[in-house]
Image (tube, rainbow, N blue to C red; front, side, top):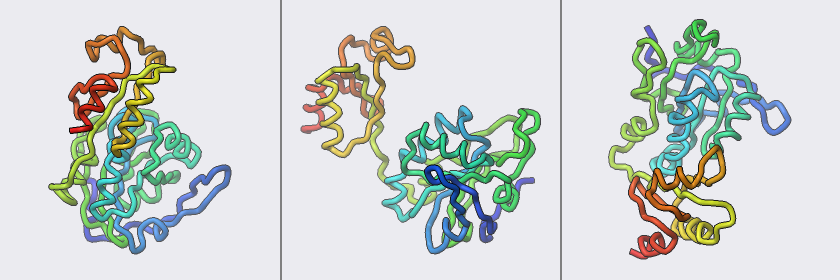
Length: 244
């Protein structure tokens, strides 16, 4: 049985992290003393669910967590410092503190170190999240113990709902662009001027073509802007939308 550590202090561990080209020791005291911290732990850097859903959503919600009293968001995985540093760069996750639990000491102390030998992973962390205040665990969301890699309760939205169910969500913005497009630049500047962060999908990258654009948006010109799943359209249409 996985242990729920609510009401307990987090384990005292020194993590070997990478700061640029240098090693840097980071302790649990550094991470948690006199702070309110959200932690999410996962089986491995660069793995599918972790890279496409778990980590990106916490990074996206970071400003909302901060507005609701959270000082830091920490991602912990049983990986070495080089891997976690590379993953942070790959994900452009500037709002997350990446902590390598290379020896699994923290995960073991939390009662969350599990055997993933069937996947060739060795010992890894079970997927969970927790809210830690001044080093003491206030709340834990532990994924159910069932086969595979369940991802049901340790997500950013569940944690935010616990902290403040009425918290205002950031808008989800996606912009389809192409290189050298002045209207795309205009649309991105308009979004930035209104404090809207966006995901950019550039044609010509990763096999994306005008056929892809047409299949998704029904349009053959760029930019095409979506906000919260609604097709806003071109730069002109975006400016009219923002003017409202």
